[in-house]
Image (cartoon, rainbow, N blue to C red):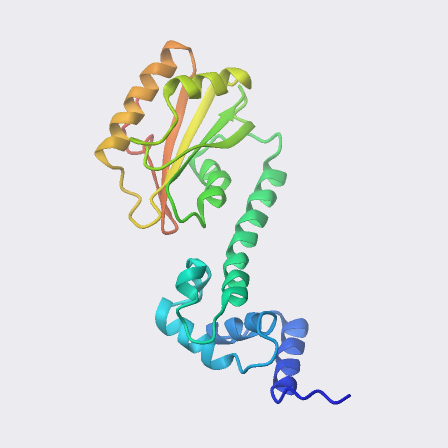
Length: 231
């Protein structure tokens, strides 16, 4: 039976181009158009791709937006919005898993290595989240998990929770990390106060706070490098 979709040949050419060449040479609107093929089977997705870029500025802005915001664009329904939002989530999970595999039993003994390990966990978060990384004597990862949501002054974790988790994994050292999803990587007054209080509490238990990393918009601040954490 003949394909009645008038855009079928265009879609086929785009798909074959991607299969044969990857995304090299694709413009941002073409990448979005290609993605939308899999969520919207019949319509011309080119105008939607341009409308998305007009509203959200760039491919990154589209993929990182809340599905409800995506659905304000003409032609983008729940299914397409969910699919686009899924892309960034899968990419972040993929990066996280790759980093875990590549660093297994390898020391995270520089700020850059810690950033590379922790950043994927917070890359696509739309709310503030705090993670604790437990390290062994060689600075290898023992465990990394979310310990709270909300800014560090109002989140649900306490120094006691961190000490308990560190003791659970017999970790002599820990790293704290959180994000500022709609701001800058500059530490707030509360960030600084909580970090100093936490370092003092951990020191009493002979646990070292190696660093507190703050991530925002692809950049980070290390409170160790900033001089907030002192040996």
